[in-house]
Length: 503
Image (tube, helix red, strand yellow):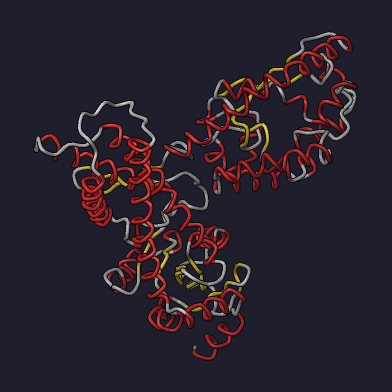
């Protein structure tokens, strides 16, 4: 076993591992996190102090006295208030876990805790003023102090987070992890965690009983041994996280053994996936009923702040686009009407979020008797049933071919966006008949709104295989972020100009 593991160690050597060793030699791992915590405290002090100072300058020095206050403000008075208020907020942050490694770098949760902490601090300040008649603060300063404290505290955390993400590419602030189980779920977990360096996990390899040590299972990741060798592997690779792909562990007793041995260890965190990760892209919630924790599956992929950001971007883009492109759309409508008889808008029945069907609007690009025309081409009928697309389609009109190549036929879908049936960016819209093509992935497709553009649009559109389209859709859903949407919107313009896969 020892010689096998040594060979695996040599085979699994990667540039990232070299960076991690170099980073650990320059700044030990525990020291990295202590410096990070110290940096957060300093940043919070500076941001809160600046916020309160700015509120004072605007309220009193710039004479924006929209709230009347009879007392003459003294700088020393407000300095004392700010001193104790800042200390109070730092204590509240500490109690909420805003300096706890487990709760940091976790997306919107950190910002939510900052909001709750600052709001609680301000409520305590108001309570002191209510209880002590000699304690008085200008309402304008109090309101601006609350707003500026929120903004600058969140900005400080955001800036530090960007620094940490950058340092992770250099080997700092990474946590070594082993995945127990090299089945489909384990591979999906590894692929996701390694593709998002911001996750903070450095996946060392797999533990699996079915594959021999040294088996290469994903990129530069190998099976390092079996569950029986966990202790040795944890010590050798300085493992801090054990990630159990629960569907790969056939024995419940084996899983209990792992939790009993490592679940209470202060050196190793044991985490267990849902057993559904490779097929479900939505989040899971744990709720207790009569003290029994039960896991639920979210019906939609985006909730809370994420949903608000995506919808806001849709509205801010769709309305100006309709106003700016309105004259062009009228000209396109006239051209369609002049070339062939029939309706201007084609209503395509498609699948929406949560499986609800709706009509996706497009400019008509085919002759009205298109089905009759296609009957003369049996080979094209078979191609259409397989790919739901035809490269040379006799049903398409001349103006329709131009509209498809330039994607102008999809402009009416801006109305679908305003009706909250579609999004500017999302998976490709599909018909009810196409759902079967997604097989086990169909449940994920219905958790977000389909998009006018998306990964499939910038990756070759109709030139990619149907299986590739499914993979692209699943990648988008699983890896959604507002920055990904912005990136895809920018990439859509050159993709449309190139006309690759547009027919």
